[in-house]
Image (spheres, rainbow, N blue to C red):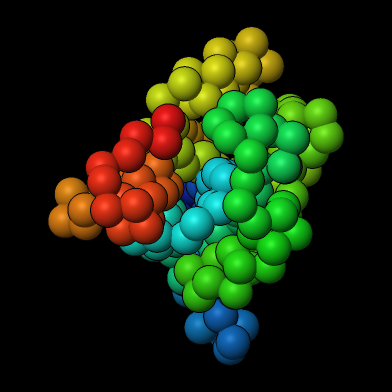
Length: 189
């Protein structure tokens, strides 16, 4: 017999009820089905070259979207991608991967594809939600175009800016280091 919903409808698959996973009762005579929200896969990406409070804020924000049973997958930009889009990285891609994997909010972390590919990442991880940092507008727009073109069913979220930290971006951290080392205010990029 199939599990019954409160309104009496039955679903064709005994383990799925209206898009949610049903946990079958321990006692089959009990007859109740407990609904559990589907575990979500949350995906975010970035350079993560010099870890700063803004990175931690982003990862904590993304982690909260997954719920208790979900997972947060982080894609680390390859060195050549960082060079092309920003500047030469300070830490290698493998060092950055190791650092991000060690953070408590992160369930899984991987290096991005060569060449850079949204499609391969989406096909591999099938995320429910993709989270972009507040300062990732350009790549978010590129991603949204590809979502529309490919017809992917994924929610795209822009994380809010962490307003309480002065050093909430890598460029601000680098500028501060340069200023401290030189005694002058330097603009690195």
